[in-house]
Image (tube, rainbow, N blue to C red; front, side, top):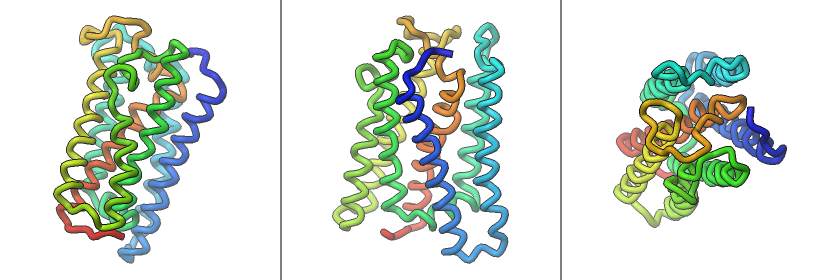
Length: 238
């Protein structure tokens, strides 16, 4: 495992816990708003999400994810599984509960957590752990989404933007998320590697940084998908 300064490790764990807590809060509130008859199932999901974090952490700790000799490497298999689960949850009853529990303002504003993620990645680059192209000094423009999310949420709260502007912002935000995912994959030491500068993107195979692709990225994707769904449902500002 690369040597990471304590403050950066703490920041990463803080981001993870905060995102998990916000998901749980929105889910519980959504249960109350919709009067879910079987709230236990929804609440259980937040517990299962904790198990997902623990399970992926154990795989990273055992070194299961560090083998890049096989293709696709296990880390990419894990990310693919996470993507499928994210889409399923976003368009399930769970997604509806989160939409109702969070509301449009918070769904958009939530993407502001990416500011902290981008700050973390840039500091990790300065420590020589993350390749430059995965930061805002390189090919990662995700910080724009984070900053604009906060601004957009304020505009939505003040009813100064409409559904069309939100939709355009959401499409652009999703596009920038896809961009950094592609850059990250092309920075791994696999036959797909395009960025050959060092270090390669291997830090995400270590504990706790495996949560970046299997949780942080999924949370951002989940949020974008819920905004699309909320707009289609005609959810109003709450």
